[in-house]
Image 1 (cartoon, one colour):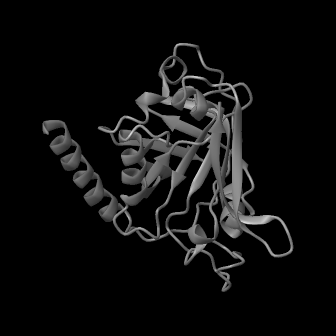
Image 2: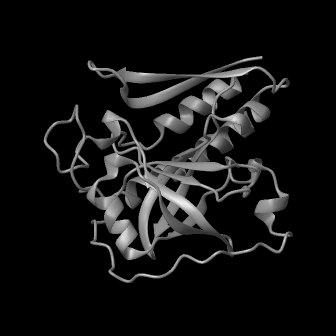
Length: 241
């Protein structure tokens, strides 16, 4: 009972932080450009020696900082639904990973009210929201707390900023495999962008974390399907061991 009460109080605190953090006005990107450097780790960095449980700790609110050249960030903002990667830097607790790939991500629901295009079923246009979901992929041969990718979900359609985290937490508490999800603060080019849901990518790392037997197939589905073929939305996955 004490553990449940402690968890509830912590989630309430995160909710208040999220609501406060969502109201900051969007500001145009700075024009400053820089060459994304190649940073070679020493080998003893925490992100190399520690498991992913560290960043998915339910009792912590981590801050992640991205540095993206101004011209590259402007390209992302011009057409977020293109979901194209640009090179950037990830700074976390004093350690820098560079280069990394950065892009916006989302399905139809994620773009509603956040792109300038007027057809919600065919997302297009430039970014008009303070927050958009983002995906980060590590460089070749690089891992971050045993992970290859990070997902930051904006939760723009959820005023509570709690649905995603609570749902995945509930599934895991019932013993059902589900992505780990926590809240995280995101700073881009020295501008605080708010609180996001840092939700685990469903991939080989997820399979190893969630199943005793990591062999077998990982099946991914897509939704929604386009009438002319292909898909325009999210992927879901399941594992068969």
